[in-house]
Length: 85
Image (cartoon, rainbow, N blue to C red):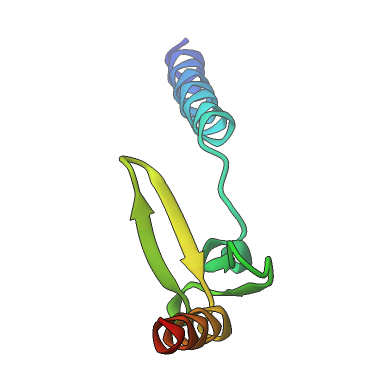
């Protein structure tokens, strides 16, 4: 009788832990590591590592990402515009 109680308690414990583990996977799916640190440039739409991009926040929650070549092109265009004026 005591062996049955111990095994039943162990089974219930494993069942409860399994339910909580499964619930955690469903509620918060894990992103693949490769996609966590890669963003798309908002101008040229190419994908780069986040560490190589400039990040700017617009408003409360919108984040814009710009790659090095787009920033250089914008800077060059702005300098040309300033020279003309």
